[in-house]
Length: 560
Image (cartoon, rainbow, N blue to C red; front, top):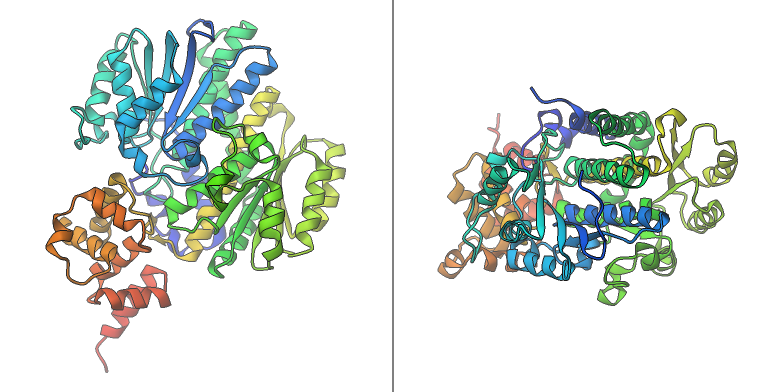
């Protein structure tokens, strides 16, 4: 689903901020358009493991954290675990290479499940393509006495990747076929509803991520209700829960004007080569960290372009590996880090966004707002409040006066079935808003061609093949020409050597880690007659590919 182009957003690269938000609303609504329980076991012997790469792994962490907290509140042992390709550093920073390693996936699974007698394993791969997850599912299929494998994705099963996986006898497609056969006897499960193409093709971080969150939370919520409240799991009950999430879209996008303001502010900051900062509280802050971390691999952005910070830092994050600050500055995520490292250099060209909800400490939010306001007026807020909560409104007024704009999302009380559902709705709403802000800002910066993300980092086999297919689609040139242009852009040469052309993809992707604007440069080479140096020079002057190509066409016009 991430690679397919959505006709609703074909011209998003030329849209205004308001039009971008409306396009994203239409795309998100496709998740809800129709197409033409196991008993609780001893947590010492059983567990639920969610695993994925990139966004899928980050959402596995978010969901496992939320439901483990729910179990703790019931004085129950935690049963949920997460695995993310690349380990905990991948929660905050792109780690693309491990996605290609199925053996690493198996080792990670064995480590998490050591000593367990029954494991519900949920592998998440939106495009049914990640070798890391394929290896884990294959391992589960070989050990049915322990593992019940579930695959969550959003491509049709027949479109699962069928390319060979290095040192493996299986492909993702063959794993899916085996699971489909076992699903007939409920020995495996494949959950792959159609949610429509992504607004921006080339990444499943938006609808794919949102749909993953919705599906797993609905399933786990029903299981918890059945186990701890004796609530029967029924079709209507599940359907009503799904409808609550659909209402979340309505509530969120009713604030289109406010979201537009945030998109414009963030876009202006990025166009000025400045930054966007998310300062959040609780799990809403985690969604800010997730959204920021996705900008680097998705848009070829620098980690400093969009950054997230969480109140309480790693204590609040509570990840498996604990504090990661020793890994470098990009892993400094606490509000204290923002105050120490970022605030002294903040300018009015930077955009700062507060993300919180009414149960959060309004005094703490207000203090942070005042500190930021001393440095820049470009302060905004995303705030969730229950309808009729007058006490929260009074506290919010002081913060609102400090902000250039405030996006207040008010939740009607009749839409809130429980405190847990209410919080999950706010999380989804926050995800939708932040996805719109970061995507819209990069669209306005020129990172999109039509509705395709073209400034992706070519850092693993999946992304290398995606880049080649994308160039072929956008240029209408033969595959060999596209790969040649891609290699020229990676190695920054006009003439490729035999050593370059005979190297394997892994060698190319290792070299590409030190290259910038690889795909935009390759596309300009294919669409014009410019040499590599000429194309590079024009893109520096005009980073929007459509405009750069239009300039070339203008230069070719016949003189009257």
